[in-house]
Image (tube, rainbow, N blue to C red):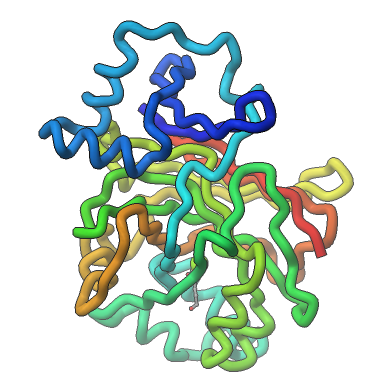
Length: 291
Ligand code: DO4
Ligand code: MG
């Protein structure tokens, strides 16, 4: 089961459950976190509780694609992990060494180290939902999307759901100096999540998610890539445990788990591009790009 939010009649945000047969059922809760909390109070899984709410209801006549989707969760904080896939390590080495492929850097060290790279990525105000514009930085000439699986966490670190995330990045700023990481990663409209939250208890194997990325320019597909969470170097629980060390997180914190898809090195995003990130069983997160 998946949870979405959409705008009804152009004005009212509505939470809804999407069943495995793609039927959309409006829910009475104001947001995803309320649904999770009410389920917990009843000692039920979120999926079982949501299913019980649907039993006497009629689905909407519309399909998910026909709805005006909103960000599924106003995550107070989005954190992100880096260099969790071999492909990301190689791309970081490339940009940090001016294109040398056989040089060892601190990115090799963090890939092998016990402690993962975790950084602060975004806040609710900087994060956009499906079909909303992502912005390009005006001081970068090498910008890419980073398609990533997002873990939706409770404040205790329990994984309550999975979503699709885009960790927009500036390869030139990051490559110039690792201390510039926050500027390479965080600006207005540099993160998107959505279109749905797949409830954790309905996922058999979170290391079997297929991730695809497509970038369109003037209606033509100019970049395409795919990967699987099976290629991840680390375990999700390991990443969450480092995020929680001596830290306070909030219900609904999203942890992006790193990218395994990197566009060709001569590619940079441009005004008017459209990015599609698809994760099987969750949905397609589509965003236009604006300079
Ligand atoms: O080290 C920089 C960040 C890498 C990253 O965001 C990723 O691997 O996804
Ligand atoms: Mg990333």
